[in-house]
Length: 84
Image (cartoon, rainbow, N blue to C red; front, side):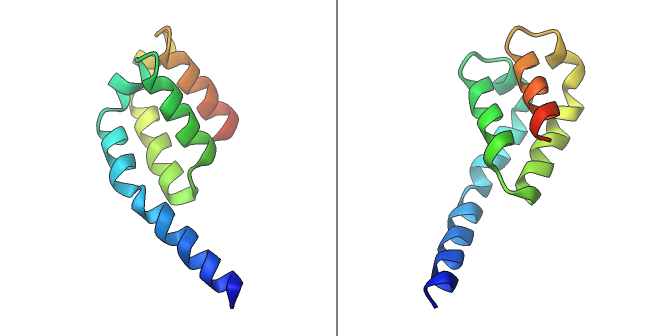
């Protein structure tokens, strides 16, 4: 019973991140090229659950050409290759 409660709370918490994830996806290129934003994107790639991670990675793939040569964006691409 306690395990079910924890799973429900975890699911609620993860789903509550969806609006934030959608905002990050909407500005993936800008955030990935920002000194602090790139760190947020990297942590999302590392820690988000699969449906969320797939959306994040899809957005990174769309912008990968401009991110590879960027001083901060390249870290996002590297993290995606490691955790994606």
